[in-house]
Amino acid sequence: KQWYQRRVREHYFKRINLRTMSHNPLLRSRPRSMVTGYHGTSISVEPRTKEGLYMCNSSDVSITITRKCAKAGIEACKNMSVYFNSPVMTEMCEVVSCENVDLYIRRGVTLRTITIDMSKNVNIHVQDAGEQLFKIYYHQSSDTTLVKHGGGPVQRIQLDTLPVNNERQSRQFVCRVHPDGQIQIDPVVREGKGYPTTAEELEAHEQNELLLLQRFREQVDIVFRLQQETAGESSSGESPP
Image (cartoon, rainbow, N blue to C red; front, side, top):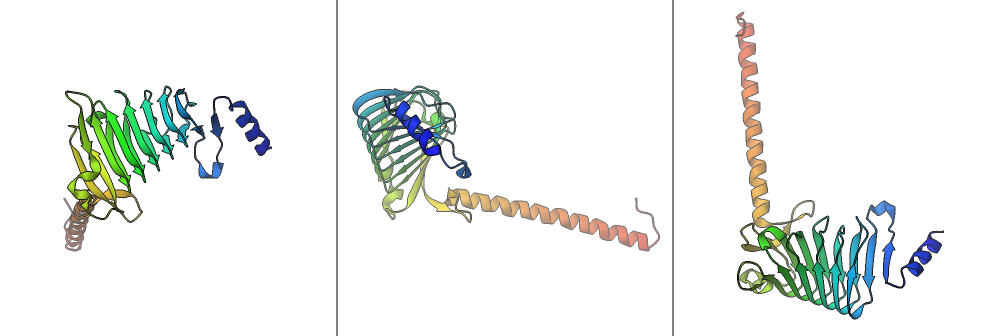
């Protein structure tokens, strides 16, 4: 029955090549709207609300996202331009195994996390970097560029040529965009649970935990001292104040 329903959906959406894929409910993942197999054309995509948008196996194509989607993913694409004219609910976008991809983020749209893996020449175009971006993760990628269009002449910042990237090429790096538009690039380290962070953030987190532990010990010492004083006064026959 599931196989038959899937074939019916694929046949129904065959004309526009936009299919809704149902995933194993045990994975608790949302269904995705897929755009695949486009070459040498320009299209507008209106994914269903609360669905992720997955673009793959396309080349020489311009895609305009005109409706809100849950998440955006681009894989195995070449010479592609993607225009984010509508918000992304999770504010996340992934680019994997792509070449010559331009991401145009319209003013008012925010992508707080962009992940780039095994890709070449990915350009991220923004109007206000401090408001539209937060973190850009990239791994085994080259020619990753942040292009700022707002507030004066166009400014191009090539992320993977900064001095911090002279370490191992296999390392993953994160570019943090501060509210004032300044960028900071650090190697990614993994904490105990595998969550990606930076050495600076991990050190600040550990210092905060030590400070909280010290305050907890001080509170315990105060309670213990008060209990001892109360016990001493009770044994001497004096009523506590």
